[in-house]
Length: 217
Image 1 (cartoon, rainbow, N blue to C red):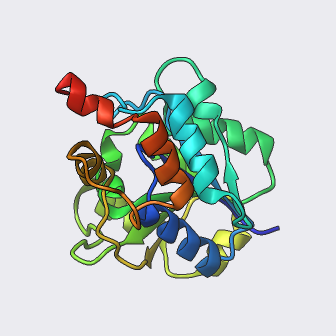
Image 2: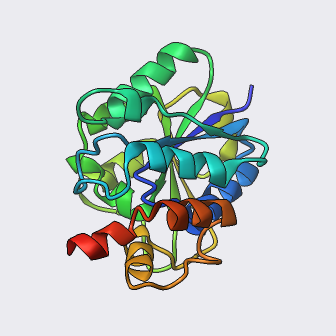
């Protein structure tokens, strides 16, 4: 059976940068599906701006109609801090015989040593790093050692093994960030062509980011 991709994030809001990365990895790695997991209470970021319910709704709207894209809202339903280790532990119990691939951007991968029980993540899943121009895989320090021990250039390894490999894949660079996107919206500009139209409609109808301007936050 083909691997399952695990794509987490605050998705505050989800945008075409997220979607294109997930789509290219889904195709290139021959994943059976990509599970989008909006974070509930992320440990490494400030509080989210849109509510969990709205972020889930935006992800659902963004991936509607795309084969292989699945919404998984377990982290927003979970109480307490959302740790990737806990999520992967749950998924490994649900899919004991399936390869799991945790999909990360290079910036997130470089911050991996700050994650909860980060060394144990490879016991539960592979790590797939979406490489973007300007970033290089670490060659020294704890991550450099991790690459030496677990790095692979073979997609076959992701299919034949359940966990334990690190694979780096170049993806199309789309210069969109959720932070910049929120600034576009709060300044009164239209986010058209930065997000799917159904996501844009939710943002404009709910005013979930315009409230930041009114509140001065």
